[in-house]
Amino acid sequence: MFDHIRFVLVETSLPANIGSAARAMKTMGLHALHLVAPKTLPDDSATALAAGADDLLEQAPIHPDLSSAIADCTLVIGMSARARRLDWPQLNLDEMAALLLRTDAKVAILFGSERSGLTNPQLQACHYHVHIPSDPSFSSLNLAAAVQIVAFVLRDHALKIGVTPKISNQASKVTQQDMEALLDHFQTTLTAIQVINPQHPRDTLARLQRLLLRAQLDPAEIGLLHSILQAVDKLGML
Image (tube, rainbow, N blue to C red; front, side, top):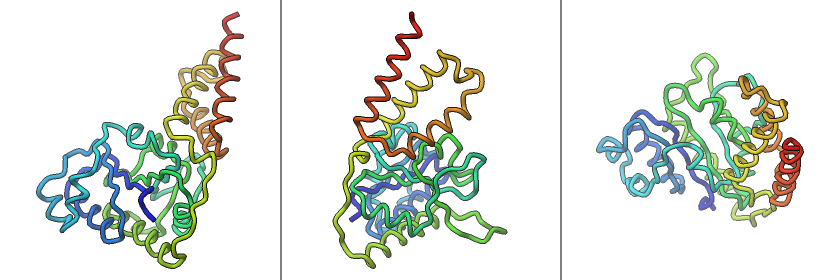
């Protein structure tokens, strides 16, 4: 049920939290742990707190950046503890579990650093944001606790619904790498025709990225948009 789901820890500071997260995952039947630029590589403290889940630590790929960690994923979920200036599609935990257990897409669930969570650019790479409802007066969850909650919700939902056929669609074949290439093409073209101010591109690009992710494009639509942009590029050279 969970082979298509990976947990991605981004820029984790403490190896002990990586070990505790691995244990939290394994107790719920999840095994795909990925690390993005950890401040300190897993060490003896990580192994000790993994408490038998050290195989997840040994097998966990270590990526230099988020793009490489999710390049082959077609659905990306970002765990966010607070609202952001730019609204983004939101799911609650149950909605997330229902979606992830019914899709054949390759899924990444992102957890940010202990101090600041996921950055705005990292969250903008996600199709959906998910918030764990906690007491507003003390809303900061330990990283491993957040991993445990998400892993439990997935397993609990799976046990309730049983094994169901996964829904496949063309959009699930569009990887994050495909989307990044399309967004880069948009940025180049729109900058050239002065739709984007090269000094302040971020807001426009973030809104465009949100639109493209929400559209659930299939590979043919990705190709069509590249073709349109290429035509605009040629007109700009006349």
